[in-house]
Image (tube, rainbow, N blue to C red; front, side):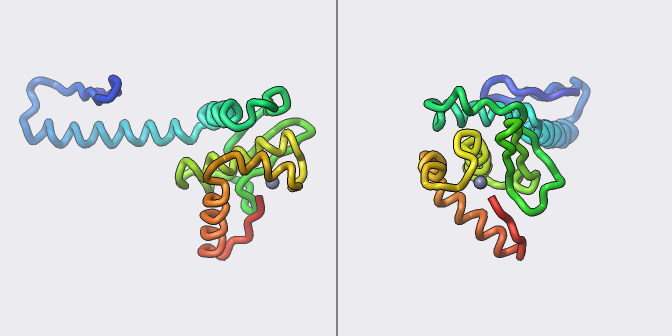
Length: 156
Ligand SMILES: [Zn+2]
């Protein structure tokens, strides 16, 4: 048995001999499995790097020569920050804690770190870059809310 995506459709292959009830049960099971596989894929470093490239092209295109990260990785050992950037070696790390947050929050955290490749400090020029992202303010509010709710001390 297998399931795969074909454009907008999901194709589930099951044996002919299955009853209606078995068919229903297995289609549900295969769809759940496919969703889990896609969710794991979303959390890969490769997908994070692809996301970084999309964000750079969209918001930091005029600095594309500076915004060339050597690596962009998910990390689990970063409890005090949502993300971090080391401009010296152009590496970016993003906390796994934001993996379940909405896409626009992940985009904000990632764009914030990418902008540090242009401006290392949190000065006005830096915020001008970050605020090119339309939901920047909203994302900051979201993250502050999560920090407050969990009594976490998180820094950008
Ligand atoms: Zn920062």
